[in-house]
Image 1 (cartoon, helix red, strand yellow):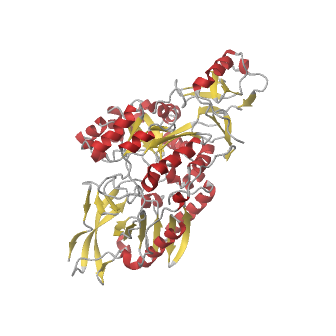
Image 2: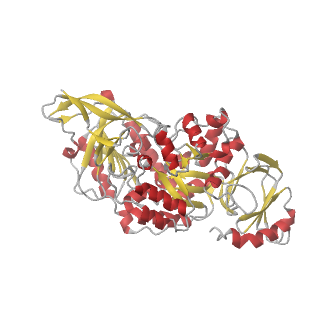
Image 3: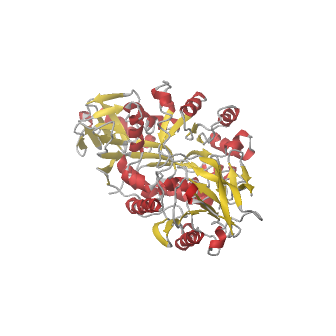
Length: 602
């Protein structure tokens, strides 16, 4: 079935008043449950709700006066009624799905509102790509608000993107109906330094009365952090320890605590509330990045709330962090995030507040999912042919393109190595002594060092940047390539065999983007992502099955990391310390400068 066309609050107000007063019948009444009130932080046993025109009209102990001919009456059977869950910061592209299929995947898990930053597609297709994401988002039966990407490139001068975003594009986007604010301001050195372009983007957002998203990926909480906050960002999800969360809140920001497929940052920060006693209304739960396998097999925001509770947070406080806190932060407290009159009738029925099994999900008063199954349509937008022809790397690659040339006369080198950190976005700046053979520096599986390459894929320049990475544990002859490479989204290839690295790169050029894993000369896993080389418009279950096969293929190559693909996809993210790779070379993110691959030679 299709979702009911949704009226604004102003349009619906006369009907809401009439239903609440008993003069007109509700469309829907839910009774026989226990209502979770996130405003008062209490459970109200027996309270009932009446819905009209997609909004709550009456919330109270007895809605019988709202029942008339045509009213659908739902018996909750003792279930808790909780507000639909909100994700305060996320990237749809990380799910490997288009907005419609992402919404179809997460709605049965109780997520009814998402605040999304499509900066992945902005790097590939510019403002046109953002508009395509925005327009498809508005078609959905749940609430998807779009944050206009702020940083494409994320670090000017350190990477080259397919397109760039500037103050003019930001100002234009602020006039679109689904734009809720500015996406995460990743160029924190630019804000600290008073960069006019970054400050102009923030100003355009604030002048539109909208929220500026933050991204301060530095452990330094001194003057630089103070300068960043003074620049205007209102929240931050990059904290990894208790002190980060506390300082953000003390500076008037909202601390966003994330649990994605590979980012486990809730446990280390939730103690700011559970042990230090800070006001929980300034804390928000989010996912940031979840791939399709996590969405299908583990959940979405229900997974995050469950995890926060397991980490010691009281269930009602955890629910506030995933509902009303988020809505309030984006200026939508009167629109969503709670079960209260006038708000969108987004409500979940669950028998347990700690484990959150999701029985039914209503969005705007319509049953959109029941027992894990979506019940409404999730319409697709019109993706142009241009969006499906985004991998332009020039001529096919050969093994020679992946040679790391040694300095003249060197027999051994001391190389700088990107060190992957399990379950976290930051990397470590490592070094390794590596052998030279026939003028080429070799990786060393015994030291867990293999090659990494960034293949330019936007302008067909043919450029390949080579380096070394450690932490995946790969053994034998293998390679993995991906056109998902935050944030520039060139192609990242990691491997122990230059021949297979070339085969993997060529395979992605052939299919228009995705992820491919090769072992012993053959492809053993493939995830096709034809939309901008980032997303599939196939069903989430199908994409998740291929993603799971990819994870198993990585394990077959020796990898033991949890969700190692997420680490792979962030190896080019030149705004998170310590070492990254870009089309301009190896980047030292602690200094925001390109650095040599070699420290010394012998």
